[in-house]
Image 1 (spheres, chains in turn red, cyan):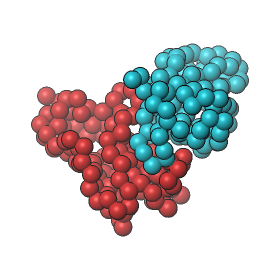
Image 2: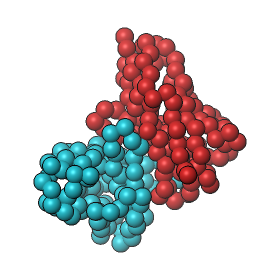
Image 3: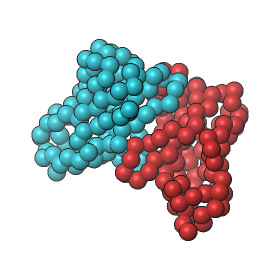
Length: 113
Length: 112
């Protein structure tokens, strides 16, 4: 069964610290993997999209990695800010049409001062 | 540039009532999607469209209908609302299936 599992479920860190969120997937075939940030009460916002051949992709303080062999991805947040408090969702697409996205349940990150 | 706009933001329906969730995008995107997000769960695809006049079912289409008469608009129709349809609904659009999807702010629907 196609699944996307994220860990941890929730995380609390101090402002300025770094953190890494994990995503394991069993989706096959594989087209691309996406990370989204979802603020409370808002729609998800895209952070990165990586295809099979990409190992790393950055978007400001966000860096995503992908190991397609082990079917694992991580999202590293550097020098966290209060505004990073949100749910981070890992999404895997099994096709190029983008019409069968498999969403993880998300990791809820809380950044405190 | 408004992006993806959904209306209404909140709605309470009684069991058996009908309603239409509106979605419009101004980015000239071909692809549009409707998702639902239940508490503690990942988003599930209800319906999608790859262009005007073309729609198809997603993972959880039962109880819903859609139409796509223009590139901009993709309304979602709920007939005979049921408590199981209590959820947050998100509309999204993308230029293609390989590119990032832009999401609306969501519609929080409660069926009582």
